[in-house]
Image (cartoon, rainbow, N blue to C red):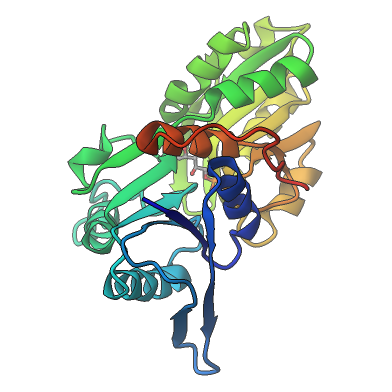
Length: 306
Ligand code: R5P
């Protein structure tokens, strides 16, 4: 079966790296907004009887989900055999509970929506917390990939004597496996969220790691308040940390705020396009697709900054 790789606008670099990796066909589209904000979607490649892989990172999802829906509907009308969505960042995983009466559990509804028009989903480190597995909320086959090994390699190459720090209990799952592969100790801070843009951090252990370089690792940097509060706590104890996020959403001015908060370095994986992308995860997708389709490995993968 031929495989077509389609980049949702903004995902061209990663889609091209994946396309080269599996030797797929480039899928051409026109996706844009009309002046009134409605979406225009046109498919310019024959997809009949082909597997179509749509690459669309789902940060800032509300503007993307409707054109993505139209695209997938049109792919089905064009008789695509199967639609796989590669969403390097998967949105709406954090509202996994009704915290206040009347609140919608959007993780469940978003999962049900995506499952209704995509046949298969591949993503990296989704925020699984109160939902323990994707199957609890998604009704399509899902493959969850992990950036931990790539982050560990980056730390080993770039940080001397690291101690890894998770800013909250949820981060322990990522931090512990990154620490294991980086041969480094780790500690977990305690976080209390006081509002959308306000958190409080506490810990009692970090001052015992005097001659270490702290490396804060979290799955998501959104308002960056979690990182900023953690940095402030570390600064009080005489440390200047490296900050690593798997997914750098960086709302509004948060990147600038994080830079001026006193971190040594801010680094993210290229699941969402951003100047901090230093950890290239495209080979995770290539390997996963090869395992699923038996496509032979291509040498000389395109690097993210090519
Ligand atoms: C939450 O539990 C996540 O793991 C992150 O800690 C959180 O999303 C970071 O958000 P922010 O950058 O807005 O503090």
